[in-house]
Length: 195
Image (cartoon, rainbow, N blue to C red; front, side, top):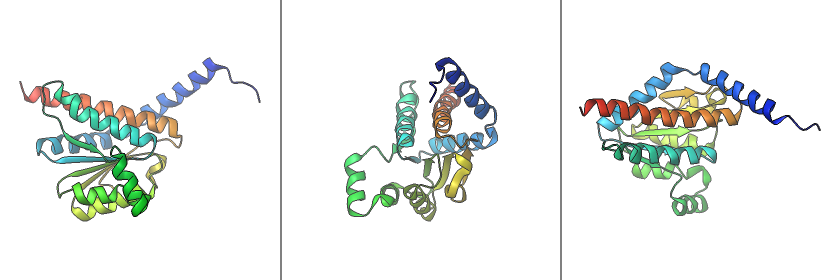
């Protein structure tokens, strides 16, 4: 196997990522931003779920939506990343099964009017699907940061934002862009409202 040229490889990856960014469904992303802004305005709670790299993005997003606003002297959004409580996640997985690790938390924390945001590259993770079903049953709004066409999650989310790619690298890159875009948007909107 021939070793790829690092610069050419990097250029190819960046060009692919640019193409994905250029094809983003910005109207869908705007709807998701509207949901986050309304959730904040109503003092409702945002629960965020994802597996693996998406769990890391969920954690980063919860951090940004709380501290990223508070450090600007703005009220933080009530955001919780459901993968952050490792003892709870492992207890549920051990006793009820991994498919229930998010659904049990949604059932206990979620209320009508709250929002569940799922971050998933495939849209087919059983634990994410169970969480969405549980949220829908509670009267919560559901948002999906998805990839690969949305998978089974597409039918369960009220506001889908699909990254137009089948490659997990660019999908996860763009999900992080969504996070940073959301916090920048909320800072701009809330900052303008406080003047």
